[in-house]
Length: 300
Length: 266
Image 1 (spheres, rainbow over the protein chains, first blue to last red):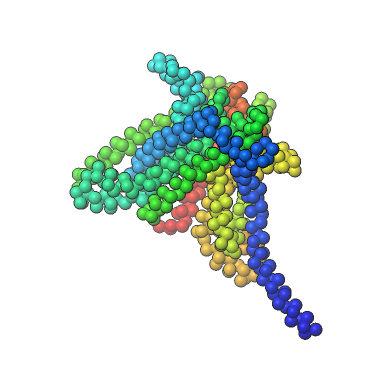
Image 2: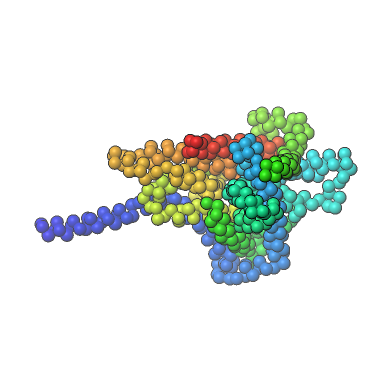
């Protein structure tokens, strides 16, 4: 009897201890299960599928096919579109953010513009495409007005709205507000005392901007620009609604691979293109977080 | 010195107005053009506010609107059920897992929706097998899409209060974990939860990529479809959707302002 008791007790304690280690984990099971099914598996489908042949075996044919002419062209155009719209957005957005910083900190102007930027940075997709169709589409407000009043034809050299220049213009519409949102905290970190210090030592405005504020803001500016790049690189809906013929950029190529008849031996080409996009975005975001860390050093 | 400052202030004022006017025109012109474009046909707006007639004339659009509203509500709900208890639980009992949860929640930011849809296609083959092909099944994918924004909001809310002390106080008074989460912690992060829900609704109402490529309907898909047949109406609906998002996000920023002013009583 006594023997049974002495052996049973440690077992029960051990059992409860094990339970105590595992029980809290049980609370996170729904979350992890959900994320596994709808986030991790889709990601793995893309990564593994990019290296799988039609028969399921390992192959590098899909990834190799990425280097073929039309896909490389699409990647090139995607990168060009993202770079130009990020650059324009970053410069104009930084300018607007500077204007806000020099305005009254709790004034109406700043509050209205930051609230509007928050909304417009999310404003993409079909509605944005239609907004621009109503503005500078073939029968858009501005197009018609220019033709009637100034006799100017916006599209004398072809309809550029549905091509790369048009996409750059439309993307700028959500890039500038995004820049305002991400760059404003960095500008707020610049103290007026630094300018006063530079001036009391005899520095000019030019010297202040190139020697003090410029180097301090450069990592934040570059980081924000990278974020803008990733933002327009991954955008799909706006381009999809605007461009109905041809697939100039890589997200539209993926649309083609998903919706059109599959060419034999290229079942997984779409996955390889998707993987290519992820790699580009991952590299850009990696650089972004490096720069972010540098910014955080003096911003805090 | 005062002269220099006055001159700089004047220069800044000129620059401010120049930038504001130029960018203001750029940002307001498309909105004004939408108003002009959608009023070319006097019938457009009266039809849009007349729901029975609208759903008779454009059944696809009506379907899309209803589908989007249902998706938005259900996504917000599923996100809250999934994220709030997990976030609280991890803070209380499993602090080591926080980095992993954060990583998973922010992961959708680096995976473009167009990429996610490629991987989701086979998963949705199973979803259709078990639950059918209704547009409401998009809620599963949308919950993933809103995860980064919702997580940030809820995590910030939890960081602002002392979860541990609250939980210990409640536990020492004899309440169970469910009571701690639902009746003690949740009321304290009300506004964070509310803004997470608002953000989710706003994002879902604007979603196009996944719905379109998985061949399901929602507001944006039906607007795009409508654009091919009646441009005026599609622009009117676009403008309405935009204004709705504007109001939602404006409410959100007011909410954030209020939270900030509560935190800094100065």
